Length: 79
Image 1 (cartoon, rainbow, N blue to C red):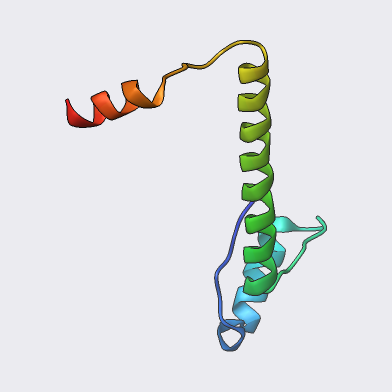
Image 2: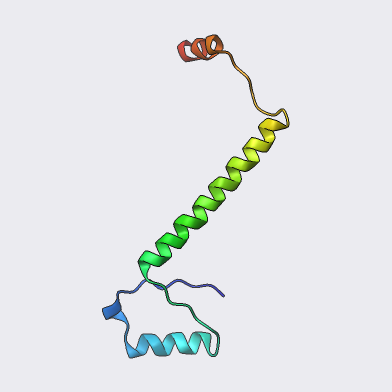
């Protein structure tokens, strides 16, 4: 199970803790600061982007892609 709670520190009350404990029982939980969460998301998205780039490079190396001359590109621009 995956859930994200967005709370400021001053919003964490005994009731919030009780509800979380009742929801997750004896499962292990990880609490992250927003800064840490955002950094992890940035790294995850960067890894996805790098994987897409690598896939595109492999496709090009395998002969995929479209080749245009500069003249063809300029003609497309003015069309």
